[in-house]
Length: 516
Image (cartoon, rainbow, N blue to C red; front, side):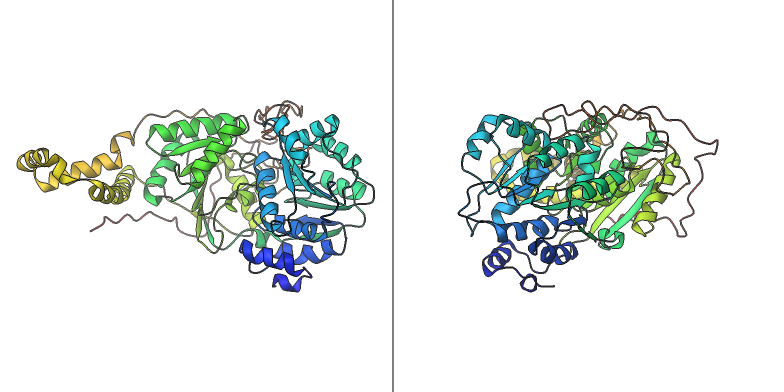
Protein backbone atom coordinates (compact mmCIF):
# COMPACT_ATOMS: atom_id res chain seq x y z
CA UNK A 1 0.00 0.00 0.00
CA UNK A 2 1.22 3.52 -0.84
CA UNK A 3 1.79 5.98 2.01
CA UNK A 4 -0.48 8.40 0.17
CA UNK A 5 -3.39 6.04 0.93
CA UNK A 6 -2.89 6.16 4.72
CA UNK A 7 -4.31 9.62 5.46
CA UNK A 8 -1.02 11.51 5.93
CA UNK A 9 -0.60 15.18 5.01
CA UNK A 10 1.44 16.30 2.01
CA UNK A 11 4.24 17.69 4.22
CA UNK A 12 4.72 14.28 5.82
CA UNK A 13 4.43 12.51 2.45
CA UNK A 14 7.18 14.75 1.09
CA UNK A 15 9.39 13.84 4.06
CA UNK A 16 8.68 10.15 3.46
CA UNK A 17 9.70 10.50 -0.18
CA UNK A 18 12.90 12.32 0.80
CA UNK A 19 13.62 9.61 3.37
CA UNK A 20 13.48 6.96 0.65
CA UNK A 21 10.34 5.09 1.68
CA UNK A 22 8.23 3.76 -1.18
CA UNK A 23 5.52 1.47 0.13
CA UNK A 24 4.26 0.89 3.66
CA UNK A 25 5.31 -2.28 5.43
CA UNK A 26 2.58 -4.49 6.97
CA UNK A 27 2.99 -2.97 10.45
CA UNK A 28 2.88 0.56 8.99
CA UNK A 29 -0.14 -0.17 6.83
CA UNK A 30 -2.11 -1.56 9.76
CA UNK A 31 -0.93 0.83 12.47
CA UNK A 32 -0.78 4.31 10.91
CA UNK A 33 -4.54 4.78 10.23
CA UNK A 34 -5.42 3.59 13.77
CA UNK A 35 -2.81 5.85 15.36
CA UNK A 36 -3.92 8.85 13.29
CA UNK A 37 -7.47 8.30 14.56
CA UNK A 38 -6.24 8.43 18.16
CA UNK A 39 -6.64 4.74 19.01
CA UNK A 40 -4.37 2.94 21.47
CA UNK A 41 -2.44 0.24 19.61
CA UNK A 42 -0.46 -2.86 20.58
CA UNK A 43 1.84 -3.75 17.69
CA UNK A 44 3.52 -7.14 17.70
CA UNK A 45 6.50 -6.79 15.40
CA UNK A 46 10.25 -7.25 15.43
CA UNK A 47 13.06 -4.79 14.76
CA UNK A 48 13.44 -4.16 11.04
CA UNK A 49 9.73 -4.19 10.15
CA UNK A 50 9.45 -0.39 10.03
CA UNK A 51 7.74 0.19 13.35
CA UNK A 52 9.60 3.46 14.01
CA UNK A 53 7.81 5.04 11.06
CA UNK A 54 4.61 3.21 12.07
CA UNK A 55 4.38 5.27 15.25
CA UNK A 56 6.65 8.16 14.20
CA UNK A 57 4.70 9.40 11.19
CA UNK A 58 1.36 9.84 13.03
CA UNK A 59 3.21 11.51 15.94
CA UNK A 60 4.84 13.99 13.55
CA UNK A 61 1.48 14.56 11.88
CA UNK A 62 -0.10 15.60 15.18
CA UNK A 63 2.76 17.73 16.58
CA UNK A 64 1.71 21.30 17.39
CA UNK A 65 4.72 23.47 16.51
CA UNK A 66 3.38 26.33 18.63
CA UNK A 67 3.46 24.11 21.73
CA UNK A 68 6.97 24.02 23.20
CA UNK A 69 6.19 21.20 25.63
CA UNK A 70 7.01 17.49 25.20
CA UNK A 71 4.02 16.15 23.25
CA UNK A 72 5.31 12.65 22.48
CA UNK A 73 7.50 10.35 24.58
CA UNK A 74 9.15 7.21 23.19
CA UNK A 75 10.68 4.82 25.75
CA UNK A 76 13.35 2.45 24.35
CA UNK A 77 15.27 -0.38 26.06
CA UNK A 78 18.77 0.46 24.79
CA UNK A 79 20.93 3.42 23.93
CA UNK A 80 21.39 2.26 20.34
CA UNK A 81 17.67 1.92 19.70
CA UNK A 82 16.94 5.27 21.37
CA UNK A 83 19.57 7.05 19.27
CA UNK A 84 18.43 5.33 16.08
CA UNK A 85 14.77 6.17 16.75
CA UNK A 86 15.57 9.81 17.48
CA UNK A 87 17.69 10.10 14.34
CA UNK A 88 14.93 8.68 12.17
CA UNK A 89 12.31 11.00 13.69
CA UNK A 90 14.63 13.98 13.16
CA UNK A 91 14.96 13.11 9.48
CA UNK A 92 11.23 12.57 9.00
CA UNK A 93 10.40 15.74 10.92
CA UNK A 94 13.13 17.92 9.41
CA UNK A 95 10.92 19.79 6.93
CA UNK A 96 8.31 20.41 9.59
CA UNK A 97 11.02 21.72 11.97
CA UNK A 98 10.06 19.37 14.80
CA UNK A 99 12.52 19.40 17.71
CA UNK A 100 13.51 15.85 18.72
CA UNK A 101 15.87 15.11 21.63
CA UNK A 102 17.21 11.85 23.08
CA UNK A 103 18.38 10.98 26.61
CA UNK A 104 20.16 7.80 27.69
CA UNK A 105 22.50 6.47 30.35
CA UNK A 106 26.26 6.35 29.96
CA UNK A 107 26.42 9.90 28.57
CA UNK A 108 26.97 13.33 30.17
CA UNK A 109 23.65 14.27 31.76
CA UNK A 110 24.66 17.94 31.86
CA UNK A 111 24.85 18.09 28.09
CA UNK A 112 21.45 16.41 27.87
CA UNK A 113 20.00 18.97 30.28
CA UNK A 114 21.39 21.73 28.04
CA UNK A 115 19.82 20.13 24.96
CA UNK A 116 16.47 19.84 26.71
CA UNK A 117 16.41 23.63 27.09
CA UNK A 118 15.51 23.78 23.38
CA UNK A 119 12.02 22.60 24.46
CA UNK A 120 11.68 19.47 22.30
CA UNK A 121 8.24 18.38 21.14
CA UNK A 122 9.38 14.73 20.94
CA UNK A 123 11.60 13.03 23.53
CA UNK A 124 13.16 9.59 23.12
CA UNK A 125 14.81 7.98 26.11
CA UNK A 126 15.84 4.89 28.03
CA UNK A 127 13.96 4.21 31.30
CA UNK A 128 16.74 4.82 33.81
CA UNK A 129 17.90 8.11 32.35
CA UNK A 130 14.32 9.32 31.83
CA UNK A 131 13.65 8.80 35.53
CA UNK A 132 16.85 10.70 36.35
CA UNK A 133 15.60 13.67 34.36
CA UNK A 134 12.10 13.43 35.82
CA UNK A 135 13.51 13.41 39.36
CA UNK A 136 15.77 16.38 38.52
CA UNK A 137 12.71 18.15 37.06
CA UNK A 138 14.58 18.66 33.79
CA UNK A 139 11.83 16.72 32.01
CA UNK A 140 8.10 17.34 32.48
CA UNK A 141 5.61 14.93 30.95
CA UNK A 142 2.32 16.60 31.87
CA UNK A 143 1.68 17.70 28.26
CA UNK A 144 2.40 14.33 26.64
CA UNK A 145 -0.28 13.36 24.14
CA UNK A 146 1.28 10.15 22.85
CA UNK A 147 3.34 7.61 24.82
CA UNK A 148 5.23 4.86 22.96
CA UNK A 149 6.70 1.81 24.70
CA UNK A 150 9.09 0.35 22.13
CA UNK A 151 10.33 -3.25 22.42
CA UNK A 152 8.38 -3.64 25.64
CA UNK A 153 9.29 -7.32 26.05
CA UNK A 154 12.98 -6.45 26.10
CA UNK A 155 12.43 -3.74 28.69
CA UNK A 156 10.56 -6.31 30.76
CA UNK A 157 13.43 -8.81 30.44
CA UNK A 158 15.90 -6.15 31.52
CA UNK A 159 13.95 -5.43 34.69
CA UNK A 160 12.48 -2.08 33.72
CA UNK A 161 8.82 -2.81 34.55
CA UNK A 162 8.83 -0.66 37.72
CA UNK A 163 10.61 2.16 35.90
CA UNK A 164 8.09 2.05 33.07
CA UNK A 165 5.17 2.26 35.48
CA UNK A 166 6.82 5.20 37.27
CA UNK A 167 7.24 7.00 33.94
CA UNK A 168 3.66 6.29 32.88
CA UNK A 169 2.40 7.71 36.18
CA UNK A 170 3.99 11.06 35.24
CA UNK A 171 2.04 11.30 31.97
CA UNK A 172 -1.56 12.56 31.66
CA UNK A 173 -4.34 10.00 32.04
CA UNK A 174 -5.87 11.33 28.82
CA UNK A 175 -3.23 10.27 26.35
CA UNK A 176 -2.70 7.88 23.46
CA UNK A 177 -0.55 4.84 24.30
CA UNK A 178 1.26 2.74 21.69
CA UNK A 179 3.04 -0.46 22.73
CA UNK A 180 5.35 -2.43 20.44
CA UNK A 181 6.74 -5.83 21.36
CA UNK A 182 8.12 -8.85 19.52
CA UNK A 183 6.34 -11.21 21.92
CA UNK A 184 3.30 -10.97 24.18
CA UNK A 185 4.12 -12.52 27.57
CA UNK A 186 1.52 -12.10 30.35
CA UNK A 187 3.31 -9.12 31.91
CA UNK A 188 3.11 -7.18 28.64
CA UNK A 189 -0.58 -7.98 28.34
CA UNK A 190 -1.09 -6.69 31.88
CA UNK A 191 0.50 -3.38 30.86
CA UNK A 192 -2.00 -3.20 28.02
CA UNK A 193 -4.92 -3.83 30.36
CA UNK A 194 -3.71 -1.46 33.08
CA UNK A 195 -2.48 1.52 31.07
CA UNK A 196 -4.28 1.40 27.71
CA UNK A 197 -7.84 2.11 26.60
CA UNK A 198 -9.39 -0.61 24.41
CA UNK A 199 -6.16 -1.13 22.47
CA UNK A 200 -6.25 -2.55 18.96
CA UNK A 201 -3.88 -5.53 18.69
CA UNK A 202 -1.92 -5.63 15.43
CA UNK A 203 0.14 -8.79 14.96
CA UNK A 204 2.63 -9.50 12.21
CA UNK A 205 2.62 -13.28 11.82
CA UNK A 206 5.81 -15.27 12.20
CA UNK A 207 5.82 -16.06 8.50
CA UNK A 208 6.08 -12.33 7.86
CA UNK A 209 8.87 -11.96 10.38
CA UNK A 210 11.31 -14.36 8.77
CA UNK A 211 12.18 -13.35 5.26
CA UNK A 212 12.64 -15.78 2.41
CA UNK A 213 15.67 -13.73 1.45
CA UNK A 214 17.69 -15.28 4.30
CA UNK A 215 19.20 -18.72 3.65
CA UNK A 216 19.20 -20.42 7.05
CA UNK A 217 21.76 -23.13 7.88
CA UNK A 218 22.88 -24.99 10.98
CA UNK A 219 26.07 -26.87 11.80
CA UNK A 220 26.00 -29.63 14.42
CA UNK A 221 29.23 -30.21 16.29
CA UNK A 222 30.70 -30.52 19.78
CA UNK A 223 30.90 -27.33 21.83
CA UNK A 224 34.72 -27.25 21.75
CA UNK A 225 34.71 -27.43 17.94
CA UNK A 226 32.56 -24.34 17.39
CA UNK A 227 35.28 -21.70 17.09
CA UNK A 228 37.44 -23.56 14.57
CA UNK A 229 34.34 -24.52 12.60
CA UNK A 230 33.11 -20.93 12.51
CA UNK A 231 36.42 -19.43 11.36
CA UNK A 232 36.77 -21.99 8.59
CA UNK A 233 33.26 -21.12 7.41
CA UNK A 234 34.29 -17.44 7.43
CA UNK A 235 37.21 -18.29 5.16
CA UNK A 236 34.95 -20.10 2.69
CA UNK A 237 31.92 -17.79 2.77
CA UNK A 238 33.96 -14.55 2.93
CA UNK A 239 31.20 -12.46 4.54
CA UNK A 240 31.15 -8.84 3.41
CA UNK A 241 29.73 -7.67 6.75
CA UNK A 242 28.77 -10.13 9.50
CA UNK A 243 27.35 -10.16 13.01
CA UNK A 244 28.30 -13.00 15.38
CA UNK A 245 25.96 -13.46 18.34
CA UNK A 246 27.23 -14.71 21.70
CA UNK A 247 25.16 -15.35 24.80
CA UNK A 248 27.18 -13.43 27.40
CA UNK A 249 29.57 -10.51 27.74
CA UNK A 250 32.47 -12.86 28.48
CA UNK A 251 31.68 -14.89 25.39
CA UNK A 252 31.60 -11.79 23.22
CA UNK A 253 34.95 -10.56 24.55
CA UNK A 254 36.63 -13.94 24.06
CA UNK A 255 35.25 -14.38 20.54
CA UNK A 256 36.34 -10.89 19.49
CA UNK A 257 39.85 -11.42 20.86
CA UNK A 258 40.08 -14.86 19.26
CA UNK A 259 38.99 -13.57 15.86
CA UNK A 260 41.49 -10.73 16.01
CA UNK A 261 44.23 -13.23 16.92
CA UNK A 262 43.41 -15.17 13.77
CA UNK A 263 43.66 -12.10 11.56
CA UNK A 264 40.02 -11.08 11.17
CA UNK A 265 38.86 -7.48 11.46
CA UNK A 266 36.51 -7.96 14.41
CA UNK A 267 35.30 -6.12 17.51
CA UNK A 268 32.88 -6.84 20.35
CA UNK A 269 29.73 -4.97 21.40
CA UNK A 270 28.17 -5.51 24.81
CA UNK A 271 26.55 -3.58 27.64
CA UNK A 272 29.69 -2.94 29.68
CA UNK A 273 31.34 -0.78 27.04
CA UNK A 274 31.27 2.97 27.54
CA UNK A 275 29.06 4.92 25.19
CA UNK A 276 32.17 6.34 23.52
CA UNK A 277 33.54 2.84 22.86
CA UNK A 278 30.18 1.56 21.61
CA UNK A 279 29.84 4.49 19.23
CA UNK A 280 33.37 3.93 17.93
CA UNK A 281 32.80 0.21 17.32
CA UNK A 282 29.52 0.87 15.50
CA UNK A 283 31.14 3.59 13.38
CA UNK A 284 33.95 1.18 12.42
CA UNK A 285 31.42 -1.50 11.52
CA UNK A 286 29.26 0.82 9.43
CA UNK A 287 32.34 2.08 7.56
CA UNK A 288 33.57 -1.52 7.03
CA UNK A 289 36.78 -0.77 8.94
CA UNK A 290 35.83 -3.94 10.79
CA UNK A 291 33.66 -6.46 9.00
CA UNK A 292 32.79 -8.82 11.88
CA UNK A 293 30.82 -7.49 14.85
CA UNK A 294 30.47 -9.81 17.86
CA UNK A 295 27.49 -8.86 20.02
CA UNK A 296 25.04 -9.91 22.69
CA UNK A 297 21.33 -9.87 21.88
CA UNK A 298 20.61 -6.80 23.96
CA UNK A 299 23.61 -4.83 22.69
CA UNK A 300 22.45 -5.46 19.12
CA UNK A 301 18.84 -4.41 19.81
CA UNK A 302 17.85 -1.65 17.43
CA UNK A 303 21.07 -2.06 15.45
CA UNK A 304 20.30 -1.17 11.84
CA UNK A 305 23.34 -1.45 9.58
CA UNK A 306 22.97 -1.77 5.84
CA UNK A 307 24.77 -4.46 3.86
CA UNK A 308 24.99 -7.06 6.65
CA UNK A 309 25.43 -10.18 4.53
CA UNK A 310 25.78 -12.88 7.21
CA UNK A 311 24.56 -13.59 10.74
CA UNK A 312 26.34 -16.29 12.75
CA UNK A 313 24.78 -17.67 15.94
CA UNK A 314 27.80 -18.94 17.87
CA UNK A 315 25.36 -19.61 20.71
CA UNK A 316 21.83 -20.57 19.78
CA UNK A 317 19.48 -18.21 21.65
CA UNK A 318 17.44 -19.44 24.59
CA UNK A 319 14.40 -17.66 23.15
CA UNK A 320 13.22 -18.71 19.68
CA UNK A 321 11.97 -15.13 19.19
CA UNK A 322 15.53 -13.85 19.69
CA UNK A 323 16.59 -15.91 16.69
CA UNK A 324 14.07 -14.00 14.58
CA UNK A 325 15.53 -10.72 15.82
CA UNK A 326 19.04 -11.90 15.02
CA UNK A 327 18.51 -13.01 11.44
CA UNK A 328 16.46 -9.87 10.82
CA UNK A 329 19.81 -8.02 10.70
CA UNK A 330 20.44 -9.43 7.23
CA UNK A 331 18.35 -10.02 4.10
CA UNK A 332 17.15 -6.41 4.07
CA UNK A 333 16.16 -4.10 1.24
CA UNK A 334 15.82 -6.97 -1.22
CA UNK A 335 19.36 -8.27 -0.68
CA UNK A 336 20.07 -11.92 0.00
CA UNK A 337 21.31 -12.85 3.45
CA UNK A 338 22.79 -15.92 5.12
CA UNK A 339 22.45 -17.15 8.69
CA UNK A 340 24.47 -20.01 10.21
CA UNK A 341 23.69 -21.43 13.66
CA UNK A 342 26.24 -23.57 15.50
CA UNK A 343 24.50 -26.21 17.58
CA UNK A 344 25.88 -28.67 20.11
CA UNK A 345 24.06 -32.02 20.36
CA UNK A 346 22.35 -31.05 23.62
CA UNK A 347 20.99 -27.86 22.00
CA UNK A 348 19.03 -29.51 19.19
CA UNK A 349 15.72 -29.03 21.02
CA UNK A 350 16.30 -25.28 20.84
CA UNK A 351 16.87 -25.50 17.10
CA UNK A 352 13.60 -27.38 16.70
CA UNK A 353 11.83 -24.69 18.74
CA UNK A 354 13.18 -22.05 16.35
CA UNK A 355 11.92 -24.04 13.36
CA UNK A 356 8.54 -24.42 15.03
CA UNK A 357 8.27 -20.65 15.46
CA UNK A 358 9.57 -19.67 12.01
CA UNK A 359 7.72 -22.45 10.17
CA UNK A 360 10.94 -23.07 8.23
CA UNK A 361 13.47 -25.90 8.34
CA UNK A 362 17.12 -24.98 8.50
CA UNK A 363 19.48 -26.66 6.06
CA UNK A 364 22.25 -28.77 7.63
CA UNK A 365 25.68 -27.48 6.60
CA UNK A 366 28.80 -29.62 6.40
CA UNK A 367 31.75 -28.02 8.24
CA UNK A 368 34.54 -26.82 5.99
CA UNK A 369 37.83 -28.71 6.14
CA UNK A 370 41.10 -26.96 6.92
CA UNK A 371 42.17 -27.35 3.28
CA UNK A 372 38.91 -25.80 2.03
CA UNK A 373 39.41 -22.92 4.45
CA UNK A 374 42.99 -22.38 3.23
CA UNK A 375 41.87 -22.30 -0.40
CA UNK A 376 39.06 -19.93 0.58
CA UNK A 377 41.48 -17.53 2.30
CA UNK A 378 43.80 -17.57 -0.70
CA UNK A 379 40.92 -16.89 -3.09
CA UNK A 380 39.83 -13.98 -0.93
CA UNK A 381 43.42 -12.70 -0.81
CA UNK A 382 43.60 -12.50 -4.62
CA UNK A 383 41.62 -9.28 -4.51
CA UNK A 384 44.00 -7.82 -1.93
CA UNK A 385 46.95 -8.70 -4.15
CA UNK A 386 45.34 -6.82 -7.04
CA UNK A 387 45.05 -3.72 -4.83
CA UNK A 388 48.70 -4.05 -3.76
CA UNK A 389 49.88 -4.26 -7.35
CA UNK A 390 47.89 -1.19 -8.35
CA UNK A 391 49.30 0.85 -5.46
CA UNK A 392 52.95 -0.23 -5.86
CA UNK A 393 55.49 1.90 -7.71
CA UNK A 394 57.88 -0.64 -9.19
CA UNK A 395 60.41 2.02 -10.21
CA UNK A 396 61.08 2.87 -6.55
CA UNK A 397 62.19 -0.67 -5.77
CA UNK A 398 63.48 -1.78 -9.18
CA UNK A 399 66.83 -3.10 -7.87
CA UNK A 400 65.16 -5.32 -5.27
CA UNK A 401 62.63 -6.52 -7.83
CA UNK A 402 65.41 -7.46 -10.26
CA UNK A 403 67.26 -9.35 -7.53
CA UNK A 404 64.18 -11.36 -6.54
CA UNK A 405 63.10 -12.19 -10.09
CA UNK A 406 66.64 -13.40 -10.80
CA UNK A 407 66.60 -15.65 -7.74
CA UNK A 408 63.00 -16.95 -7.79
CA UNK A 409 60.45 -17.93 -10.41
CA UNK A 410 57.31 -15.87 -11.01
CA UNK A 411 55.31 -18.79 -9.63
CA UNK A 412 57.27 -18.82 -6.36
CA UNK A 413 56.95 -15.06 -5.92
CA UNK A 414 53.20 -15.08 -6.63
CA UNK A 415 52.67 -17.96 -4.19
CA UNK A 416 54.58 -16.14 -1.45
CA UNK A 417 52.62 -12.94 -2.08
CA UNK A 418 49.29 -14.76 -1.94
CA UNK A 419 50.27 -16.61 1.22
CA UNK A 420 51.30 -13.38 2.89
CA UNK A 421 48.14 -11.54 1.85
CA UNK A 422 46.02 -14.47 3.07
CA UNK A 423 47.80 -14.40 6.44
CA UNK A 424 47.79 -18.20 6.48
CA UNK A 425 50.14 -18.44 9.45
CA UNK A 426 47.40 -17.02 11.68
CA UNK A 427 44.84 -19.60 10.58
CA UNK A 428 45.75 -22.04 13.33
CA UNK A 429 46.55 -19.55 16.11
CA UNK A 430 45.48 -21.30 19.34
CA UNK A 431 42.30 -19.75 20.76
CA UNK A 432 40.62 -20.90 23.94
CA UNK A 433 36.91 -20.12 24.38
CA UNK A 434 35.58 -20.68 27.90
CA UNK A 435 32.78 -23.23 28.03
CA UNK A 436 29.51 -21.65 29.13
CA UNK A 437 27.00 -23.36 31.38
CA UNK A 438 24.72 -25.34 29.05
CA UNK A 439 21.18 -24.22 28.40
CA UNK A 440 18.47 -25.97 30.41
CA UNK A 441 16.74 -28.81 28.66
CA UNK A 442 13.55 -27.66 26.99
CA UNK A 443 10.46 -29.39 28.29
CA UNK A 444 8.48 -31.20 25.63
CA UNK A 445 11.25 -31.16 23.05
CA UNK A 446 10.39 -28.43 20.56
CA UNK A 447 7.63 -26.93 22.70
CA UNK A 448 7.87 -23.23 23.41
CA UNK A 449 6.71 -23.80 26.98
CA UNK A 450 10.19 -24.72 28.14
CA UNK A 451 13.42 -22.96 28.98
CA UNK A 452 13.11 -19.93 26.76
CA UNK A 453 10.00 -18.22 28.10
CA UNK A 454 10.25 -14.45 28.40
CA UNK A 455 7.50 -13.71 30.88
CA UNK A 456 9.81 -13.33 33.85
CA UNK A 457 8.76 -16.76 35.19
CA UNK A 458 11.35 -18.76 33.34
CA UNK A 459 10.85 -22.46 32.96
CA UNK A 460 13.29 -25.20 32.10
CA UNK A 461 14.99 -25.19 35.49
CA UNK A 462 16.16 -21.57 35.45
CA UNK A 463 17.42 -20.73 38.93
CA UNK A 464 19.63 -17.73 38.25
CA UNK A 465 19.73 -14.56 40.30
CA UNK A 466 16.89 -12.36 39.06
CA UNK A 467 17.89 -9.28 41.01
CA UNK A 468 17.10 -6.71 38.38
CA UNK A 469 19.71 -4.25 39.55
CA UNK A 470 22.52 -6.73 39.13
CA UNK A 471 21.67 -8.79 36.08
CA UNK A 472 21.02 -8.31 32.41
CA UNK A 473 22.90 -6.57 29.66
CA UNK A 474 21.73 -3.21 31.00
CA UNK A 475 23.19 -1.43 28.03
CA UNK A 476 21.34 1.81 28.58
CA UNK A 477 20.88 2.26 32.31
CA UNK A 478 22.73 4.10 35.01
CA UNK A 479 22.49 1.18 37.41
CA UNK A 480 25.03 -1.20 35.93
CA UNK A 481 25.61 -3.07 32.71
CA UNK A 482 26.69 -6.59 33.60
CA UNK A 483 25.47 -9.42 31.40
CA UNK A 484 22.61 -11.63 32.44
CA UNK A 485 24.18 -14.74 33.91
CA UNK A 486 22.74 -18.19 33.84
CA UNK A 487 22.12 -19.87 37.17
CA UNK A 488 22.27 -23.53 37.99
CA UNK A 489 20.25 -25.85 35.81
CA UNK A 490 19.16 -29.40 36.32
CA UNK A 491 17.51 -31.88 34.01
CA UNK A 492 13.85 -32.67 34.48
CA UNK A 493 14.20 -36.16 33.09
CA UNK A 494 16.87 -38.70 32.35
CA UNK A 495 16.58 -38.63 28.59
CA UNK A 496 19.68 -38.21 26.47
CA UNK A 497 20.25 -34.97 24.61
CA UNK A 498 22.11 -36.80 21.89
CA UNK A 499 19.07 -37.42 19.67
CA UNK A 500 20.20 -36.60 16.16
CA UNK A 501 18.03 -34.41 14.02
CA UNK A 502 16.32 -36.05 11.07
CA UNK A 503 16.48 -33.18 8.62
CA UNK A 504 14.71 -34.79 5.72
CA UNK A 505 17.47 -33.62 3.37
CA UNK A 506 21.16 -33.97 2.63
CA UNK A 507 23.79 -31.88 4.35
CA UNK A 508 24.98 -28.91 2.34
CA UNK A 509 28.67 -29.24 1.45
CA UNK A 510 31.13 -26.50 0.62
CA UNK A 511 32.43 -26.31 -2.92
CA UNK A 512 35.56 -24.23 -3.26
CA UNK A 513 36.81 -23.39 -6.74
CA UNK A 514 40.22 -21.91 -7.29
CA UNK A 515 40.23 -18.80 -9.45
CA UNK A 516 41.76 -19.21 -12.84
